[in-house]
Image (cartoon, rainbow over all chains, first blue to last red):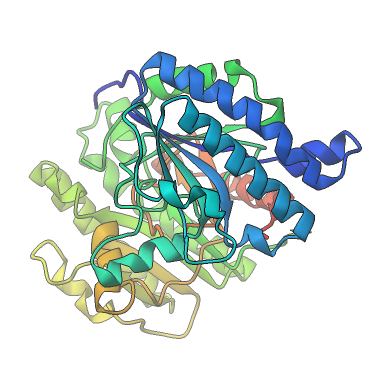
Length: 204
Length: 204
């Protein structure tokens, strides 16, 4: 049971945008815009640490059943984030069902990975079932996403909510109670410190 | 976001048998036998509460790479547990690859569910990949196991370790730091109390 150092692939579930907005007297959809800058800070931290790959839960097909103003807000936040990360020379790949109207056309070009920097996988109009039924044609649809070592979720929820089920099978799961727009670099420092203390067994 | 009452399906990951044995100066394989009685107590608690279905992580194909005395010990503990649960009129189903030599022949008859009591799914020689690649022939191999509401893991690990990835997608995950052979009914009471406080969103 070897102790680990740095995770090679970290997943992020940036939850709590709507609860954050409501707690400040804003309308729920206003929360998503406040999630972009924290995501860019986290991107820069991961890059400076030399983490080779990160995956971020943007939005799911289930999420698109929410009221239109919310749908528009998280869609727009994901597009802004993706464009900025691409501009910063990440190796961006968007993972999600691009055959649906709910997939932002601006992101079509990133369904296959572009660029040579840190790998960033952004889940957009993603659905775990859509992902897995790819096996019927030979492989899961997210087959270019590697196995996750660590998953960090904001907003207090202790569940995966359909986040990359295959890549998550052996991942350590760290929960931050604060809402995502209240992100602080210390949250991720603490997650990494905790991760280093865990034993890696992979079932052996 | 409705508050929940009782989970309809709970998963149990009874981890920490070997660490428990080592902490008592026993050899690692001696830990597994001490996991049987706690499992029967937990079975009776779930049945008395009226929980309709439980799933228990017995052993995986990865686990069978461990030293032979350990392999024999957890195999034998799983057979004893299964037989006793069947005798107590549970609707037992064993989920795992029965085409391998590592599958206990005594349990072959339970690969399809037997009985009409509380549903008990025991994972024996299970492997998440074996489960999912069933999709290539139409469906996952554990398709008779329903979606999990709550997963409780003993032994402090905050990861699924390949436990029923499809059924776990929306499950709330509760971790008990004590090793499994140190199970106390209060652990499950606390998990249920915590579960009732969680919001159920299912991505909506």
